[in-house]
Length: 307
Length: 193
Image (cartoon, rainbow over all chains, first blue to last red; front, side, top):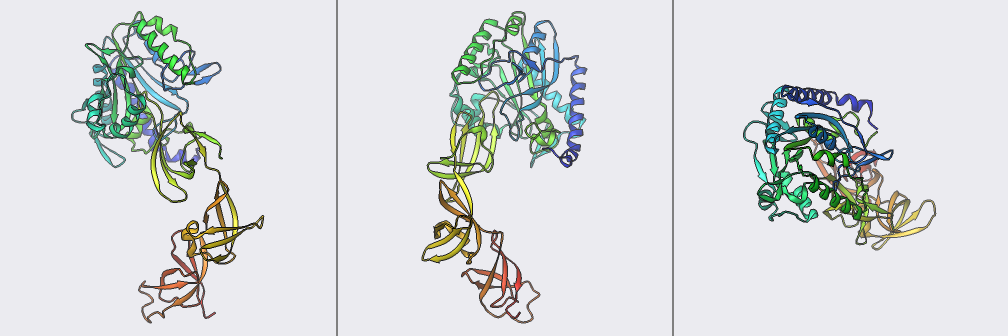
């Protein structure tokens, strides 16, 4: 249970959280993004191999608002963003909450590189707005937003720190283990950095790189070893997307995981979607870095696992 | 055999059975990279030998909870390398080897009540009260005039345990000791009273 004393002790962090959310809204409004709100309950979450949706009266609590956001894009909305609650079953840890807050933004007629530029400008603006520019002190590290934000491909990072090259469809267990133990701890010091060009087999909704189909145009933003955001150029081929969803659902069925209905409305909308890119950023983690908090419990009034 | 656990049950303090030995999770971190699978990184300590190692579990992994039980026992006597205890509720007597008694050997006096830890029915260790009282059986006289300097001297306790104490402690004094640190706390009774 979260006590009144614990709540009182979080006041400075919750004030910083409020300020960060104000700065996020200011950033996107200044760039003519439309703030939208999509349903928290959904009939058909995006099938992902390792994300478990929480059931809710026959439907599911949305693990991410992404499919609704892309339907808006397909309807002609050019630039949209949302600050949304997201729910994922059985994710509790220092940097995981089963209920958390996502910032998602999407750009029509853009690719993943435009999103990376947005990340740089957004986080720089937040650090200026919080009067923490350019240096941020976090858990014994001195971080910075100024200077070059490095980009490293998954292949380069694994060759350098894990001693092997993952290829287009690496063994998931080996990949995840080495990512967590050897690669992630080196990413994002002192400036945030991008891990790019994910293996093609690890990007359920991303476009493959033109001329290089072994990798997807998917990236993750890391800071201080913490994964902050996952972005990609959207796959806009409805047939390919349906095939990937069906593959994933079949894998989930074989693994004994719950199998969701195919998101038909989304697949239908995809026929009308041209070039686009979108990204999801974990607001709780970003607040944790700016407030020098050890874990997410310190930046959320009521951590979901504590009641 | 303990109940079957899955990786999502893992947290600090959970006790597992691995290759027939009980282990306690002393450090735990949940991680889940990007769109990847959940990983449960644990540091495990063998509850008998004290050795530690790191292991990472996936959400599909299953294991047995260590079948642990704790009973209040009273220490009776020592016979060679064996220590005899009696269960305070069933009056059953149990012998424990010197190896399993471990460091507690320094603080065991007759009729001391301890918590005995059982793994699958066999005793693997004891937990002492945080404080015990022991008599000093051998002490050199302190040097007069040096009592305020914080200097210490070694003395032997009734169990044979040698400890550093302030210079004013004398043979026959009864001392309170902290069993967790092994350190002197205070004098309870002087040999002169």
